[in-house]
Length: 384
Image 1 (cartoon, helix red, strand yellow):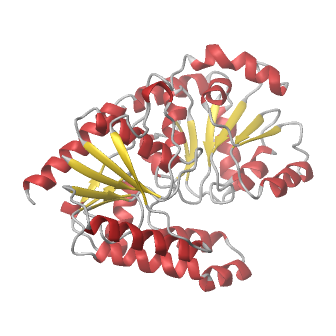
Image 2: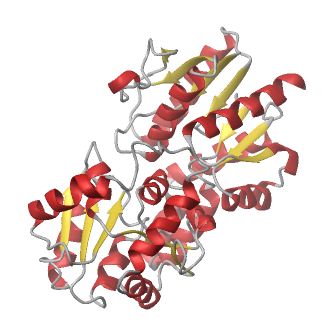
Image 3: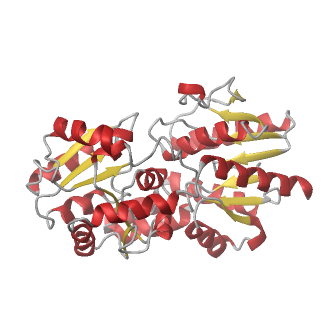
């Protein structure tokens, strides 16, 4: 079976890119012939990981551009032109491009994200969002994609996204498939605690008995870091480690200082290897305004960390409050977030919930994800 996968950009810290890397490696093991169409790719090729020559090949589509709108438009145009001159059984896109058979909605529904963001924005920001040409382009591209007669299936990485696609675009149930991302259950494991907890805490000057919350990701404002900082002021003695690169990092450092949290908040910047940070933490926190289903949540749970998140996160589907973590109803409610953080810090609670979190994600292996994808492809080929 010949499959083309489309993903424009590679960010070594990006969850979507890690999904594509894992999918490439897993599908190659299922005897699927894979071609990746991208501007550039420099993925993780350690230990036989996904890389050209490891079961797939690269087709570069990198036209000139200036600005985000031209970037996305020119890439979509170049990909569709390249696909016309080549033969594939199926084309799966991770971008909002209408010339695909399968679309993985890993970035969620842009229309829903804008609605969530406007709710949290001030008057001037709402005006800026309404006038931003990039959002106009993305909304139009999203509409063309979901209305395309070629589109045969949408892979949703959570039931939340599935319902959003159906509600906003009216797609038939038969076209919507929920396939959760897979996680490397051997690499992301509770044993990381033994290897990294003491070492990483010593680097940051944090005692073993201190509660440590961990945030991993980029897009700090969207994923709730400002609310998280304010909520931390209501949790005595606990520390927060923020792993990720973001252009608003200087402002958030100043915010931590203003809140008198400088000694309890640690910004590490982007990290190529996140496993040590999972190993040193007690609880993973993601009070996001909108997140379809972050890979970091799966990784953290696989490492035995409970998850504190919001109902606007697809990962909340895996959480029963008080069992695998806590789900805050409103990402903007700092008081509720502080309460959830405090509950997770109760003696022995994080360890109990962390063990339950590990059990909850054990069905979501990389092989299991690849098998679900290949079954979908086989179903589509049988009805082609």
